[in-house]
Length: 237
Image (cartoon, rainbow, N blue to C red; front, side):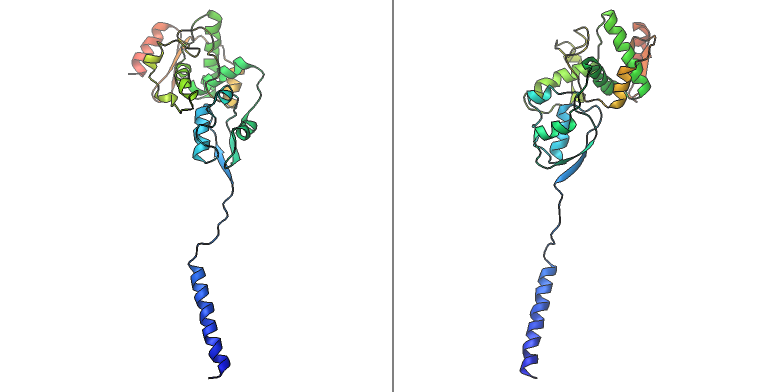
């Protein structure tokens, strides 16, 4: 065997060994820095904060500060792309919408939490307006629940409005307690979508003064308190 061939064989073995070692190394993968995230209709700022934190866009609690909590209702629910490590200002700049009529925004935020369909939203918007005009308390559970959670939001803590004990909190006066106070709550209680806005702007005149949500999500409307009490006994057992 020539000295040339004797040198070539070890060289080839070295190349094969290097290739084998490279084969077992983890390959470089490109990970995009931006994340696609959907903010559903009806989420409040604490929900938005939690969704974005789970997606590693912000740190949890970033939006739970007084200067951002006052923007409740103005963050438009939609699908966005955010960079990981975004600041609160980055998020607000993308999501914030300007609304001319604050009362419409508050009513839309209530409709988004209280009922599901556009038809029901328009009916409830009509009931809300009638009660305000008559000086009747609105008695909206979702507003009470938000007011109870707002104390924790202001401390930078998450609070699930669906888990609030309404029986206890209805008795506690607050700017969001629509049982103890007449008129709309102090501010929006969620970030509503377009359907809720359209319903708030185009309420339906109707003979109803009361409504409730059955366990299956159906809205039951009543003309009198007696009818409403019978509906509660039937649908909320």
